[in-house]
Length: 272
Image (cartoon, rainbow, N blue to C red):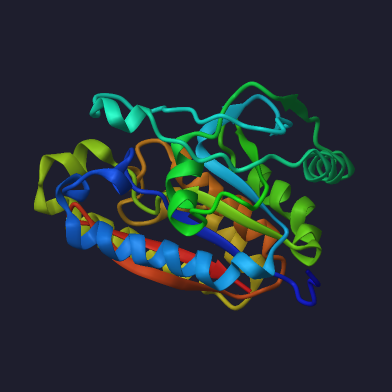
């Protein structure tokens, strides 16, 4: 395989729990059906163009950026209250120690203190969307943690340190949710729909700013957006977007997917 171009970076919504194998798609077959098709399209578009995948999920936080160094990662079924069969999933994508070491080196060069980990499996922010996009499980995957405290500026800097991977055949994916108020989504309250639309409009406007410095500055100020805290009572599902925006460099961002899940507006973003 010859990698001849710089790959884009993605921020994707990974949905709730193991929605991809639930018969009713968590009670929203239309919304989740659109998300499924979008994730499959990413896989179809990039399977033959990449050497490996780096994923930052909203479900892993450590005191310093921590890299999974497992050659054969297991799956971490980090969801609760679902049928037994959802805890028997198998997606044996290999790790990649060479890529893990490369990520470590780039972060160290970027001024970060790092750590290694080889026991934690891929959480559902990794294996659920990638099972749909890359069901063959034949592309190496390395997971990188968020940093506790979830400071946007730290995560943008982390992404900047990793930008060169895009020219080395590595597809960088931030896996989270553009809206993540589970209590609100489960309540069926129609106010959530309006709040999510307001926040989504602001977030998309920020991402699509043609000046990357202004874009990143806006993202660091996300708490000033309309409906910010109602959309993200805690920002762990938004933080992967900060990493992706940093890794985007000066490349323009655009809304790559727009849909609804359980009455809430959600988006995916692509840079480059």
